Image (cartoon, rainbow, N blue to C red; front, side, top):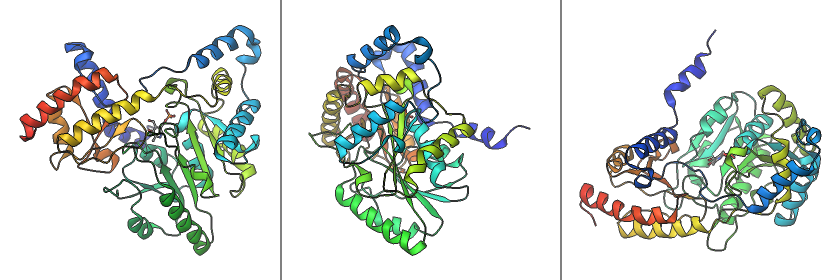
Length: 397
Ligand SMILES: Cc1ncc(COP(=O)(O)O)c(C=O)c1O
């Protein structure tokens, strides 16, 4: 019998994907260089040469039977150790190999982490604005996603609303910093306050509340800053990392879950992920890719272009009168639309071949997202177009 749940999901297709497909089709008509496509979060800088060299070396020198064989179900043991050492060195943690589980990108890591610390019917709380894929990630696990309305002043956490939503059914909090779509990095004050509240609630309810920390943008932070490592603030944390953005490898599907060694059942989390893999079929990410990322574990692509693009767009948008919080990381900027309905605003922008994503799906109506992981030259060319759009449609300049 057809599964009606998945069939019904066909009606709720990703707006981002639809806009990206539109941009590609429009590009075929007028030349893609003339479409200012700010839709998709696909990195625009190449992976490092060292990564490419590592892949080539593995193919040239490794025994093909070993290289292309199944990796252990928790991931290549040596690679897990290299990940643990890197996190310890960089963030002052004390992970061991047994705390790391290799997964297919952040999406794969989240699928495991969610199932590890919730059961069907449990609530997971997250904060707007949010990555719209959180709904399918959580809903298909049987847990229920509850969304705290945005703090539109700074895009930190709206604690007043958060505290109202906490209740004994809450099993986990899903946190994304640096944040897609706002570009905000949660401050140490925010993370300390979040941890204090959760510690008190764990005692009050008599059960664990885990933080699932979604960190694919952890390395993309601007102005010489770094992103506070959430697991340092709260023991019951599962960090979900991905090399998709930091090493520009989204197609290679590689990331991991790191269980804080002080969390409940820390020694069992990776093992449980191995069991979850058996059920959801996301087991054994590519063994070549696991070994190649381990060779360049502390490297990132050259991400200076994202900061350049952030500066260009932030200056232009503020000059044009947009209300916008300056992003501290990622490759997204999240201004308020110039009319109440951001869908209408983005529809009007399309006439100028500006592809902007309305934020209704990000649970923050009235705002829109620009993914500025595109060539700086194109960002520069888009600014007069943005000016023209604003002037003609809204009479501002
Ligand atoms: C906030 C957030 N979480 C998770 C993901 C999934 O990333 P991955 O490609 O590593 O699966 C993305 C991808 O854009 C994202 O923006």
